Image (cartoon, rainbow, N blue to C red; front, side, top):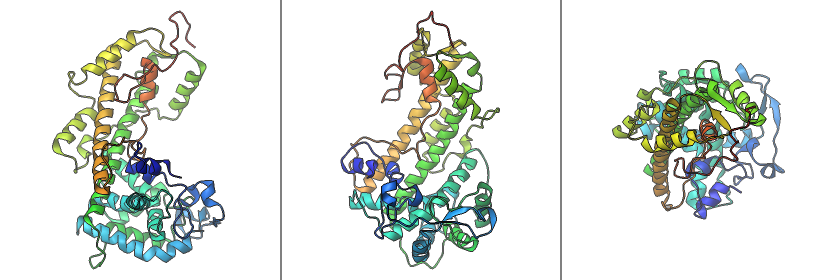
Length: 413
């Protein structure tokens, strides 16, 4: 049973984004798992899951694909595409941005979660058409995430079916081994056309609440991408950049862990997000704040508390990862990172409150953002090990010690 959904219904810590990606045990009203092959083992008991070599051309040819759900998808394919096309026209008229296209995918992807939250149904089931919409959107979501990461780095890509399908081919998406068979190339083009162009003569009405929820979720995803790129740049500076040469772990486990992370990263520094590409939907003042934070250029006064805490912690002997470099640059980097972390967390939480209001859920229950919209910090645990202190619930250096400190007389590994 979905813990995130139960927490939402029982006033625990939750978020809409957490529920969206925590339905691996949920069935639709025809008995198929909403998550198909990603579903929990118990949800797949007695459900046909046939794998065959793909007969279609391109990168998918002769690769294994999940065709067991294809009959159900074919049954609901036309109404789901009509709904997708109607959403596309309703949200942006004749012209759409990539943010609008992302909202269209997120709308279908979140369909099961929104249904269950609206109906207050902890055990489901989910209507089959909504589940099929989720399955079609699941493949597209990965492509749109890759696309928006490129946009966040400054790329320009025309909003067209051809450019989108070129990216599908380049990234090897829509193979269908996990969710369900994506169908033939004409089927993929037909669905992509509905997503990117919509149709002018649809009779389907998409209500304003649904549009607003999709916009909120899509904006959360976009912000999460900017956070991820920023976090990755900080991680690189720790494990491969100028910080690494000054780090000395005091046990074999940390030596191996640091080496493993280092091996997973390129020799050259990853690009930082282009702040000029921050989402247009953000308020101007917030865009400015995020742009400054993403460039690690916040005013020293703003960083004063974190800088003071980091300086004090660095001066204490015996951390499990000893830092032997000049303190000031590291202190500045830690303080900037925590400031940026809080800014993104605050805005993502504000959007979550908007979603709760749209769903008629209380605003005063704790927020636990899903990792799809607020990726787990990768640099933060290393900063904590260097400083010897966890970040507290307030996202300041007020948490517990990371563990036993090593006596100053001990020799490093």
